[in-house]
Length: 155
Image 1 (cartoon, rainbow, N blue to C red):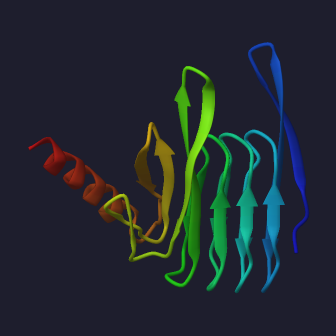
Image 2 (cartoon, helix red, strand yellow):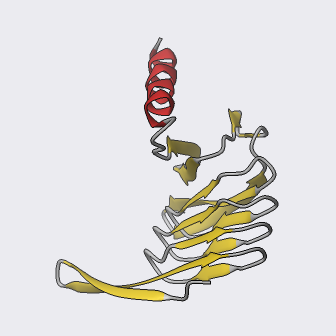
């Protein structure tokens, strides 16, 4: 099991402290909190969760859960038996409000979008967004499918 990794980064005059976590092995869980704090797991039933804004959560094991609950956070699963959990935050005149939290397995739909493995998902202004994760074997075809889908939407 790999432990916590910490690094600092400057954004303008603001110092951002990023805390990332990664684990390997069955039932080896990973959780982070804080902005830009990323979490990843490999292994069966190894869950990954983030609560910070702009954070990423990813799992590669069967029966695993990838949960991204912060504003502008993303989640990705690599197994068809894994669960994807993402929060839909919306900004209004009173600030950020949690609209909903959704969870689905690949092959099922969220807001009419079929969830796929190896794809990052997040909400933006109430719309589910996605971006295929780059894979040496399938990366080009995944990206081409995204472009084709976007072009079809413009018709």
